[in-house]
Image (cartoon, rainbow, N blue to C red; front, side, top):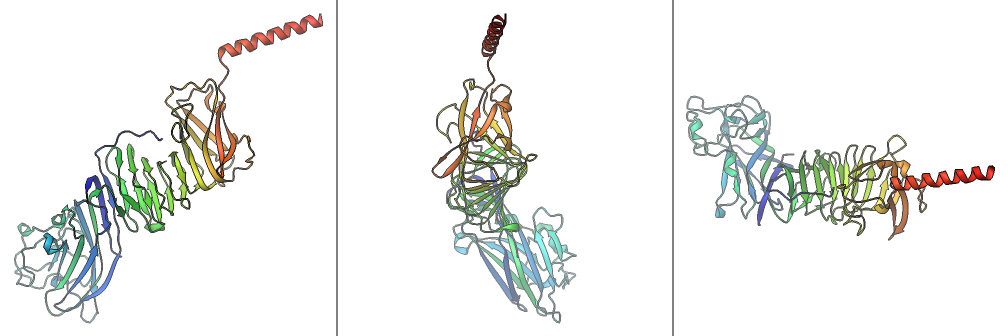
Length: 471
């Protein structure tokens, strides 16, 4: 798998159309999986749970966090944490495995043979945590992994030394291995207690491959981490909805270019004030919720997909989407690059294969339409362009050819010299093309000074003529 400079955060957890050149900054993908095990760790026995990282879309690993939940099998013979040893291994022996030690008999030393008596834990391991799990006092919280690979858990206790730590979670970092297997081991090293591996999970960050699929799983996300335009060439997949929706995150001054598009029947949630540009996504049949910032269409989304434009969000670019649900406060950004030419190239055109639902709009909450150009185009002759097409406009009212529906729109302009600006821009119902109803923008500039002078002179002549006839 060929890697590119795209950052990925993979997490498996338990239970206008004007863009600059792409930068070398990275994207971060959060990849989530629920892993329910519910497996007994027998007295002086062990339990192993495997997790396959296939279709991760990753090229390397740069950071790992782990969640682990253990409990007592019975109250009569409860787990004793001071007996538990646990590791996480990446890869298989033939490739050279990497191992991190999560637990190594917490609390056991040369002067304390029994260690921690906790009978259950539900903890997160993170190298950036303040305290090592060795001194754990509570069964919940976030801790550093034990990390002492060289201390034999089956031997007598030894004095604790931070100098023995050589297998933190960072030991799992490095290039992606061909065998993308994670193996969790939980072992009971002493006789006299029985425990249970309830669930576990891992959060992984790394670099992304330039192609393939990023299957984030329920609740995962893809996020820009640098400034400028950054590209993810792999297709981002979502199969979950609600709290399991996959996040698409771009902050201020960030553009996340998903050139590989979206896929799956789940949900995506766009957040952050930056831009997400979505490439061809014919295989996407789910819902794209644009909660914040801008989404640029740069291809075709699945005809049965739904895009929900939230208040304060922006839609732009050129391409085809499925159905669109438009909330009050959302904005359509339309870019004009040439006065004449081809729709979708010289000016933006979004086609809605299904219904554009404007049912929540009214005289107070209108459809925000922002018209953008660089100010170099001469609009003095007046022009008309098709800017939006849909199979059905719900809530728009009269769709008779030539009908003026400007009253439904709150129009702003930038870089467009049209006299008093929005007052001279009209939205008209255009013709039906290939089954799609059209909305057109018509620019009617104010009369020029010469035209006004000519009109004034004509009026003066008319008045003098009337006076002669009356005399």
